[in-house]
Length: 229
Image (cartoon, rainbow, N blue to C red; front, top):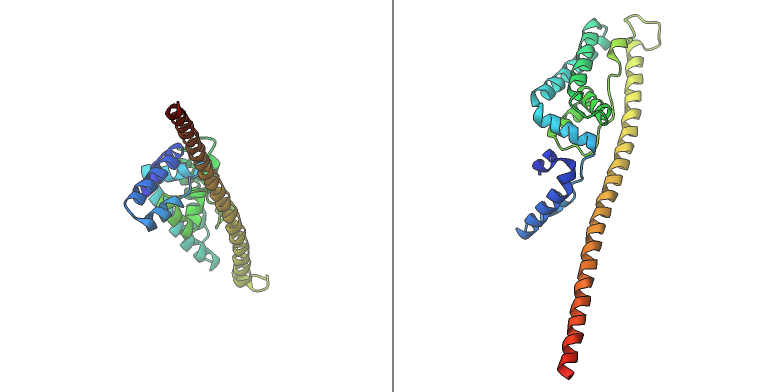
């Protein structure tokens, strides 16, 4: 199944359906259902899937940088030197830009956003590295680290670091809920498109079957007429 996501998106549906037919003939009902449910990637998602395969080392470095960034963010929130966080943030920008430069200009922004999400979220990183995205991932996490502001120790703000941390957590939870809803909409859209494609294929087969029935009926009528003559 992974091989399907290495294909150009124009070949995905035909290859998927051929695999479904092969697995059905082999009697693999569970596998047939699983493959049949696979959705065709969007153009941007297909580019990311290709980058994971063709630039695996760079993607791995980007994910590793994300681990360092998350650790540095926690240290900065505790009042440690924020310069490390800003330096890693600049590296993040450069690495994302370099990888995204391999994408066609029409998909470059969505590809960059997806790669950036792989830096800021361990869950997004796992999805990207799997190489089977069907849609781009919206940005989550750190934001602009170069302009990060922190509540210093001894701040007059009520709650100090705790208040800042809770606000960040609340903002993140709200953002993640919105993104989850957006993903559900995209997934429902892709499911509808797949169903419409399947309906189109079935309609074509039905029309072909009807033509065969009409031809057989005409042949039968002709044969009966000859028999009576």
